[in-house]
Image 1 (cartoon, rainbow, N blue to C red):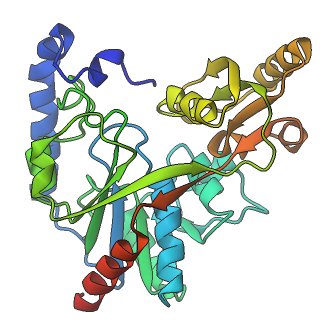
Image 2: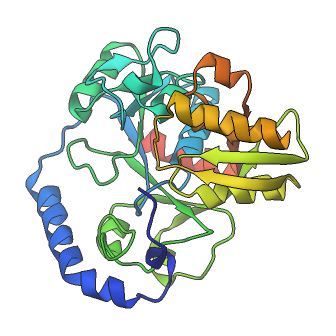
Length: 322
């Protein structure tokens, strides 16, 4: 689903106020789950990459970046994910040669092109499996609100372009839980892009880092027809515009959308008619049949720190104490 527009208004709308009683019930249920679940203490250090809100905020590029940082520091990390949208129960190390995005989930399959990724619906089982496979650190992609596995370090990602919206809990707003509760479990904050507004509550997080998303494009077309199935489609368009690429049309699909041959044919016919190339995100591109991958351009992205040395220092200090 696409996030409703009223979520992004810093001032709660009438709809948000009407939904507030349901949000309080949702908060109570998730809160009870937090306090009633005994977390499993994994045999390895667990670094969680999560966010406070529904939808994408930049967790995947942060996970990829931390993987490379930790590898450079001498660790042998492995990503643990539940494989949202996939059919694999796991635990299973994703094999890009034999598995499919439909089996592993689109984001795990995409990440598996760059690093080892284990998919498992049960976090405890997945953590034990990774330890037996010879890795010495777990990067848990998402799962900040999942109490079943103990986290040693929790990184929270915030997209500065939208921040925390109206700061209301789902369904009245985008928050997965009340902010004051989430702040207590946060070790480090990663702000991606310039913050849209100042949020004083975040100042209680001692360790804060600034980063940006950098697109990696070998060939830059002048004009494109863009399509994607991500949490914030307009973010994809903004990235293309910042590259001085004219987006003739942005065609939006639901997050994690499985493309049909009919939809791809329609996109191909539109591109041929206007004689303008198609472009999509890496997350969408990996799900396409090879014949369509050859016809459609992909826009990979990577996270770039403002001060990478500060992140390395923080990781060294934290990991030596665990």
